[in-house]
Length: 519
Image 1 (cartoon, rainbow, N blue to C red):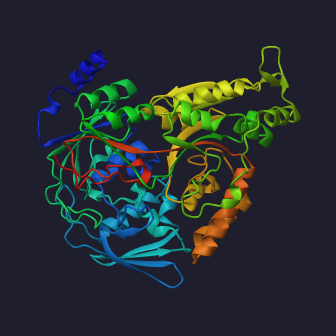
Image 2: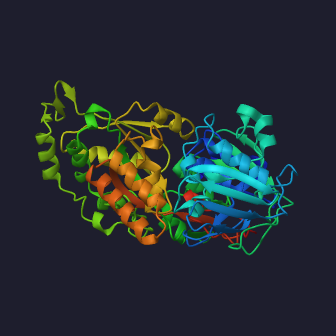
Image 3: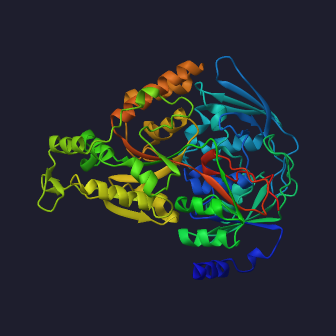
């Protein structure tokens, strides 16, 4: 452990010297920091620090509150949102924020050139108008029951057209302008991101005591992929904070006199394995179900996550908005039934212990990011599935290329840990055919699913919305499109010298804006 501490100290170098610098640690970097072109969580948490949304998400994880928009009204038919904007906001470049920036940002998000994978979060936009510099008329082609909730997401941050056009293909790589409490300074891929204080910032959302500016001159985010290095660094006081502390060492962090452990609550994060249904090996629902019911989730939660996760038998966390109670019990672990399903599907056991059919071995290729919890979970599942004659071919990827590799879709199964806000949020992310090939990596194209999702989105009452989203949950669970494994807890680990660090649950963004943080 001592050698690891020395190595991490060398990595940090002189960056720990300034008392006005907050040093943060992450295990995973991103391919870029242009929020409109990705679904990637490692992009979102940094983006939310230097760019802002029209509305913010309160600590309860359910309530949109004013931010760049100080107020709004909604027409009775649910199609027209009129936002009144703050008139005291500026970008890091000094350019004044106006309604034109909002119109530009959403038009860019929905443009064919961007092909934004999360563009649906903005609703089906019919028209965007700026009748004056501080009013935006946001007209939808159809109602979107979750619009305000979705507008809190990093996908919908506001961009400066001048910055986008000046940087071109390097936007989100060499720089990006924003109105957030931090400003993009520099990025060294796989090494560090540096943000600087936005001195003019004073428009923090009401959830924070400090409305701005932040209390540090700089925020340095170091990429440290190795679990042991991150543990050693926090224990040695080399970092100020991290939300990517290995789950198996949380108990150790709790007992460390120099650290504070705070759990994000609420928090919805599902670690799942998804099936690409258009690949012959996993096209049969019986094969998918067999894999899902042949594993011991409780043992995985206890043995690998050390109790810092709960077994997931449903796609949606039971505490989440619009969870369908009728999906409880649909996934029942049963090794003997799993074997029977594979027999029924025509996969017979080979002499080497691996099932085969028509000369093909049941050896699905499995893609995932090599950092975090997934590698150990994948290895555990691989062991369980050997018992029923399935041999997973594990293929981990570095976080900077994992998204691109998954986009190639040369696999039967993939895994991510997905953060979400509600049942409707999770269902719309993954199961709408409009989102093929990503994030609908199952290539699930089903007219009934699409219609139910649309009805849920268009609902004008909470009861109707819950009804339609329940039907979606039941259908995709019955089709065994995913293997839900764990509902992951999330923690912020901080040095005790850091005060005011309350973790936020939005899309794994515990730091969010960091306005109350100080030494």
